[in-house]
Length: 96
Length: 422
Image 1: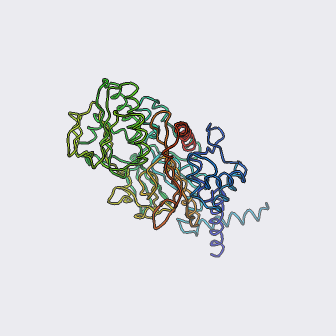
Image 2: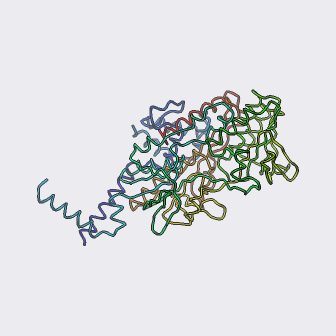
Image 3: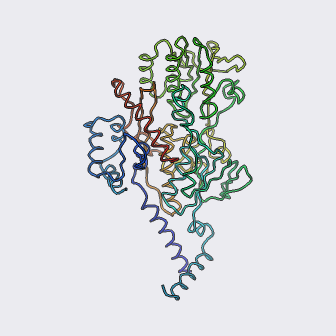
């Protein structure tokens, strides 16, 4: 019975690892409502996947501080903390 | 791999299969999630579930072969766009390995974790996601039943109703009176009636300039109000008249035979009447027991799991999502949050506290766009605005900014429909 329990735990934790590997950080999933996930979608809104982490962080901080003009990003950036911005930027920078 | 090791693994797997509790064994093999409703919420969720964990067996229940999107359907009514630009198939979703059940869900047995379908089949689930959108509350406005909608279209679910309203406007002689009615909150797409009024006014101004549009409203305030009203004063003076609740705007009944909308203060006989009626969550929500007395579905703001029935999640227009409006953007954002939570729960984990975004554009004219944006987080069992974030386009923006927002509205539609259906 001990073997069976170990097998079950193993299966569950593999599933958890699969789920967390693909999981975006808090707030990041909604970005693709406007920022295209696919490079094939023509849009004036930049694709974030693969963008330099520092560029995303700077843009978000400037939008938030009112130092960069925006149409909606100035309003949206104000909803995110520095830590959240760092995590979102790192996640998008790692995407391809 | 040696023979003895292979045999050991085979035995181990057999032992696991024999002794695991049934539900755990089923989940370890392939957790089953059924998603009901193939709109922005349901289709997004089905895809996001497969992305979060490709082992999840996802079935999407949707009777329609084609999805007809509501955002931008007001431009179809005004003759600025064809309905075909609103139509999307489920081919790419099926290609993702999502099973399509092309029929309606008719009942849910939460204790057996099973959904009954109109074709007689039953689907077992480990978790169920309901994304049924809205149903019209027929006769909640006296006189407005399904037959009345053939004469006085609602056009609040895109498709044939959209085209009917467009044909009626096309056929109306110059000088005709168009009357719209807007319902009390909550309803699908809070700025929608006012975008529609704007684009109908644009149609009248350019094609039938002696005509007039009256909007009878069951409310005194509405979404993006100061932006809409400033634009109306600039673009459509004397053509578009908005009548709020306090000025007698509340429609108390309609007479389809005479195309008349009736308020406490008078009768408005229309050449073209557009009645946007009271609404509720799609009927499967009621059948599943997840809708409350309001007709909408209370949910946990982190997981979108029903507060009334465990194991069932509700997303999109049907959900009571606190400060989040009933918009396509919100439905898509909720779907992705819900999918991540469902994947975590199925894997035995606990979902993180989410943050969601909404961005919603309206056209006041083809080259004049305005927007509202918001960021939301759970607080006190509800989704609330993150303090200091969100808000409307600036009131004093130059026309160039309005033109950019109209372009961004168009880009948003291309992007979101590509993500959900492309």
